[in-house]
Length: 71
Ligand SMILES: [Zn+2]
Ligand SMILES: [Zn+2]
Image (tube, rainbow, N blue to C red):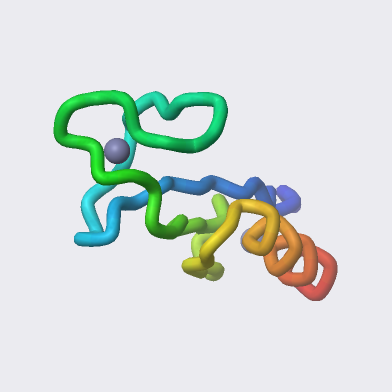
């Protein structure tokens, strides 16, 4: 029986909900045209049963760890 993999995937989003795939300056400021900065993150797990949004990637990593531990 194959073991389900729990790998965290995260996508940064702008305030209007569109994906942010732009590069940011080291200080986290947008530096490309059309980029309004990272508002939040949408994260999901490769197992397909977990999805979450959060302000920081670190917070999502924490809740994902909890999900993986309890799965
Ligand atoms: Zn999972
Ligand atoms: Zn952007």
